[in-house]
Amino acid sequence: MEAVVTNPVPERRKPVVPSAVLGTLIFVIAEVMFFAGLISAHTISRAGSLPGLWPMPGQPTLPAEATALNTVLLLLSGAVLFFGYRLWKKQSPVAHWVTLAAWGLGAAFVALQGVEWVALLSQGLTLRSSPLGSFFYLIVGGHAVHALAALVAMFWAWMQMARGQLTSGFFFGVQTFWYFVVLMWPVIYARVYF
Image (cartoon, rainbow, N blue to C red; front, side, top):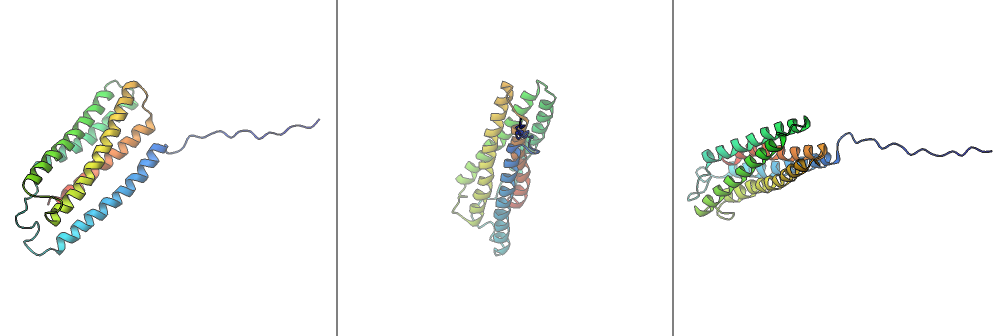
């Protein structure tokens, strides 16, 4: 009698990097290049302007001092999310509230940026009013879109955490996206506001 040889089904190994993390990292790298291009174009335009013409006469000055508070809130949000993740890994019930606090700080940042935009628009700084306005709304607006998307993802992670269904890969992917938003902002703030 002949022995039947069967090929055993290979075991599926767990990926070294979860798909959510890998996808987010690829996205973040592409977005860093996107913002590097915008900030480079802004820097070149500003450097090539005639003395006294940046910003153009009649255009408002960007509120760097008021935006410093927003910056602190955003940086604090990143630190709080880091601790929320660590608490979640330890299965602490406090992690739920810490993650919600990180989300709240991020939402406050976006809301205060919105207030800033309304004030600047009322003072005449628009997308078409000057190169400063164009770059400001393009760069800061691009960041705001990313911040809103990351807040939605963080809120979803928070809801999954509350249900006990949050996976480590998804939470880490959300963290990666949020840290991109948090760490990109000081670069934008330093290059656009000053």
